[in-house]
View 1 (cartoon, helix red, strand yellow):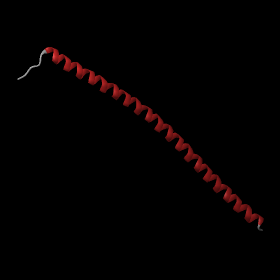
View 2 (cartoon, rainbow, N blue to C red):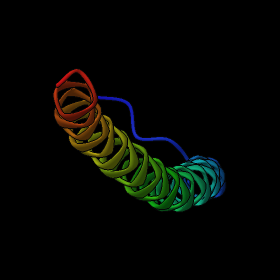
View 3 (cartoon, rainbow, N blue to C red):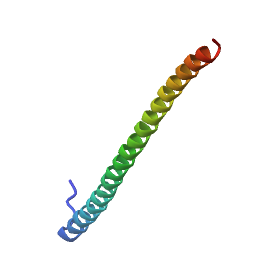
View 4 (cartoon, rainbow, N blue to C red):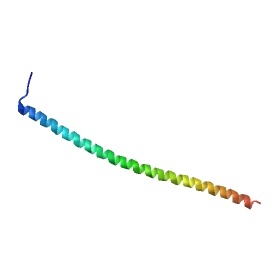
Length: 78
C-alpha cells in the first residue's frame, strides 16, 4: 500500500479545501440569485393580480352600462 509523503498529502488536502471554498462561494451566489428571483416572481404575481382585478372591474362596469343603456332604450322607445 502506497502512502504519499506528508508534503504531498498536505498539498492534496489544501487543493480539496480550496475547491470546497469555491463550491461554497458558488452555492452562496446561486442562493442569492434564487432569493432575488423569488422577489421578482412575487412582484409579477402582484402585478398580474392587479391587472386581473382591473379587468373584472371593467367587465362589471361594462355590464352595468349595458344594462343601463338597455333600460334607457326601452324607456325612450315608449
